[in-house]
Structure formats: structure tokens, C-alpha cells
Length: 383
Image (cartoon, rainbow, N blue to C red):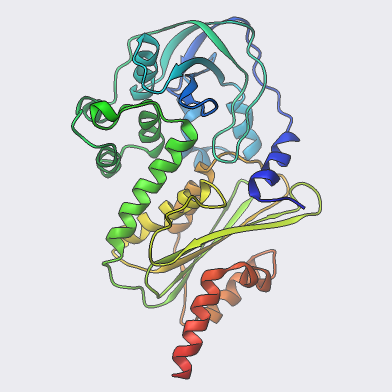
């Protein structure tokens, strides 16, 4: 029916109809703070602030808070439609007053007051599987911002021009800075050695942060003892159900997602995996692969354990692509729940089969990790 997940979700998002905020060629309000960097035309890209008519708009771009504070995915879309994207074409290594303003916004501790004048009235909406939706956009004619007060830890990393971007990401995460704030700072070129700094498209910066953090966690957890039972973690929100199987094996990982009658009567299943060695090529299912992997790996590292992991995700009618934050935060929530423990893989899978909409054989047919693990256990029993 569809060639790949991206084409499937493009079809889905093309049918979404949400009303966005109406603004004229001038607006006064605030940035949550948030900056969006496009990727079309790279290395010249459109960059600019996300702005709201509200004076306090922090919640509009704080995905870590949404699952606990927002009731539905439609509610998220509706308040994200209040965000207006201003944009200006900029080279990724350009340094000018506009880029400085974008950096000031991205590093700000709180919402930043803005006065914007557009070339024409902002129009349209934006939906993408990897990024949060937002409302109308237009090229900026002029932008004025108040002096922003930086988050002290972000500010320290910004002024350390000898600190590698990877080390900045890991250090800030260890100090409790939210993922969304780290990603935005990375996107505006606030990290890294001075000559290496550049604007990074928002989509790429999200995956880069997810991948950097999960790669580091995986390298650490590979030295940990392996869990001694099969565990099942579960969590549901935003028309998604996550069932996560941890197995007493060395690190290996697979993410399988099924979209069940989201468009009409279709059932679409997509997946990708890695063995004990982290994946080198970009995952076929997109950025959610790395977001989910982060949720698993940081939980195992926190516990001081090692395991193999297979994530089963089902999305149901009413599902809306909200960005990979949705996967990351759902997996994080699942890994905070008390797991069910089983002495055998069959026992764990039998429980999962009772909770999932799709029958178990559909998942087993799709999964590479489960096939390999079951074969290895069968060979071990035979020996």
C-alpha cells in the first residue's frame, strides 16, 4: 500500500485539518523560548523563532511536560497551532545580529518577549513525524527581542569554545538539563569548538542528541551484569500503546511499530534493529528509533544492568504524528513502571499477546531480534 513509513505518514498528515492562529503582518508576544532551523536548501537554511501571542508560552514548547499535563494529542496540536514561525534565509556558518538573536532565544531560561514584522501574513500549518507540529509561517522583515537571561549551564557550555559538542551534550544531560533545551542549543550552533560551530537543522539536531546520549549509555551498560529474568514494561497515552520486552541477553535492540486503522482499514508495520554493536546507518523508520533507544538505554544504565530490548508499539485510530518526543517520553514513562517478570520468553510473550491488538504471530514474523534469540535458545537447549 505504501512504500515505507515516511510515505505512509505523509499521507496521514496531508489529511489533518486543524485551525491555526490568525495573525497579521505584525505581532507582539513571546517565544517559549524556541527556534526552528529548516533543512531545505542546506547549507543555506531558513531559521527563525517560534512565537506566540501569549506573553508566557513556555508550555507550548516543553514536550517533557506534555504527557503528564495534557489530556489528548488533539489538545497538543491545538496549542501548537498557536505558534507562529518567523524565518530568514541564513548560511549555516553565518554570524550576524539575527543569528545572535536566535542563539539568545535558544539559550534563554524563560520565555522571551518578541516584536515581529513579516514580509506577508503568515499562513499554513506544519506536521512531520520527527518534529512537533506548529502553525503559520512567513519570512521576517524585522524582529526585535528583549535581552534574554541565559540558563547558566547552557551559557557555560556556550562560552567554552574548546568543549566538543558531544561532551557538552553529555555533560548538560548529566546535570539535569532537559533534552529539549539541549537540542535547541545544539541546533543554533551553541556547542562545539569555535570553528566547528554551525546551525543544525532541527530535525537533525533532535536525532543527533538522541543518538549521542543513547550511544554513550549503551557503551556504559555493556559493562554491566545482564538481568536474570524476562521483563515486560507497559505504558499507554496519546493513542499509543507501548509494550517493552527486556531479555536476559547482551545488549541488542529492536523497535517495531504498528499503525492500526489510522487512515482507514490498513495495518502497517515498520521496524529496524541492531545487534550488540550500535547501528551505523540511519534507521529506516526514522528518528523515533533513536528516541526510543534513549529511553531504554538510560533506564538500564541508571539501574546498572544490561539486557536485550524489543519495543512493540501500537498506534490506533485518532493517532496524530506529534514528533519523536512522543516516543521518547512514552518509553521513558514505561521504563519507570514496575515491570512484570517471567522466567521464560514464552511466558513474557504470552502476556504481551493478551494486551496487544495484533496477534503475536504478526510481531514474531516482523521481529529479527526475537527470531535470532529464540533460535539461539533452541540451539542451546539442543546442545
